[in-house]
Amino acid sequence: MYFSLRTMDNLDWSAVRALFPTLRNWVHLNTAAFGPMPSTAVQAMNEHFESRDQTASMGFLSWFDRLDVIRAKIARLIGAKQSDIGFCPNAGTALSWFLHGVDWRSGDEILALDHEFPNNQYAPLMLDSKGVRFRALPGPRTRFDPELILDALGPRTRLVVISAVNYSNGLRAPLEDLAPELRRRGVLLCVDGTQSAGVLRHDVEQTPADFLVVHGYKWMLGPAGAGFFYAPPETRAWLLPSVVSWRSHWNWRDFERLHHGRPELPDEAAMYEGGVQAFSLLFALEASLDLILECGRDAIERRSLGLARECREILLRQGGVGNLDPDHPCDSPIVTASFPDLDAAALRGKLERRRVAVAARQGNLRVSLDFFNNRDDLQRLASALAA
Ligand SMILES: Cc1ncc(COP(=O)(O)O)c(C=O)c1O
Image 1 (cartoon, protein in one colour):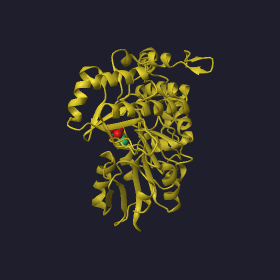
Image 2 (cartoon, helix red, strand yellow):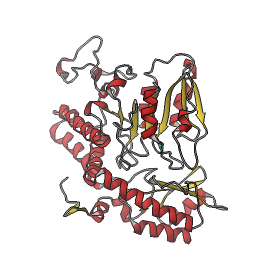
Image 3 (cartoon, rainbow, N blue to C red):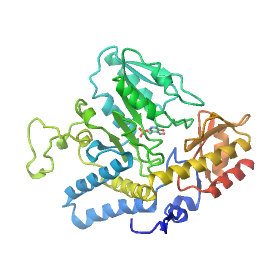
C-alpha cells in the first residue's frame, strides 16, 4: 500500500474513511447490499485499461500471474493455500459449478434453512431432475445452535448448504462446531461467505468447508462481478469441472503451442474457473483486499462488531424490536430490527432521503456495520430515525 494508514501502531480510521468517496455524501450502513469501493480499487481498474492501451496487451500472461498473487492474498485472508482459490463472476455461478460437479445418486438429500438466500435454495431445488431431495429446515430467528442441523441429518443427507451470515437477520452459522462435525460424519458442506468474508475472520482450518463461495461486491468492497471460491485438495480429488476451456489443460500458459486433444486437468482450483478472466474487476478487488489486509482481520472484526453492538442499542431505543437473543452476545455486523406499525421498506425510503443508506429485508430494517463506519454514522442514523 503506497500511503500510510497508521500513526505509530494505531490505524488511522479517518484516513481509511478518506479512501471511500461514497462517504462524503452518504451515511453508508448498507455493506450487506453493496459495499462502497475505495478509490484505490477504481484506480487499479483504470490502470489496467491504460496498460492495455500502452502495451497492446502483449504481456497478457503477466495478468494471469497477477491473478495468482491475488489468489495468495485471498488465501491469506481465509487461511487457505493459493492453489485452493479460484475466481467466479458471482456466488450463484460458483455454487452451480459445485452442485453440478457432484456425482449425485437418486435419493441423495441436500439440507438448508428456509430463510437462506435464494441462491442456496433455488440451485439445490433444481437438482430434483437428478432425484436429489431438498429439505429446508425452519431457520432460527434468535440464536443458531449447531444441533439444529446436526439433529436433522438423515441417512441420505449428502450436503449442507449454508450462509456463514444470514442475509436477512444477520444470524451467524455456528460453523466452528458444525463444519468439523459434518466432516466427521461424511456430510459435505458448502458455505456461502458472501455476507462474512472481508469483515469477519473466516478460517478454513477451523471451519473445514468442502466448498466456499464469496461474491466480492459486499464486505470485500470490490466491484460486482469479482468473486472467488475455495476448493481444497480433498474436493478437487472428486469434483468434476462443469466449465471446460482452453485453460483446462495444465500447460495452458504455453499459449503459442496450445495442447490439442483431451485436457489433462491441473490440480488447482483455477481448473474450475474457465478461460480469460475479468482482469480489471479482479485487480480492483485486489486493491480492496490490500486495504482489508492492511487494516487487519482482527481489527476489522473488532471494530465492526463494536459498532454493531452500539447500533443494536440505538435501534432498540428508537422503538425497534430486535430479533437477536438478548442473552446471546451480538456477534454479527448485520443488525436487524422491526418497528411495530411501521413498514420497513417505507422507513428505509425515508432514511434514504436523508442520505442514510440501509436496507429492508423480510419486514426488518437491516443495518450493516463495516470497519469504515464510525460513531458519527450511528449518531446520524439515530437522528434520522428519531425524525
Ligand atoms: C448470502 C448471499 N450470497 C450471495 C449473494 C449474491 O449472490 P450472487 O453473487 O449470485 O449475485 C447475496 C446477496 O445478497 C447474499 O446475501
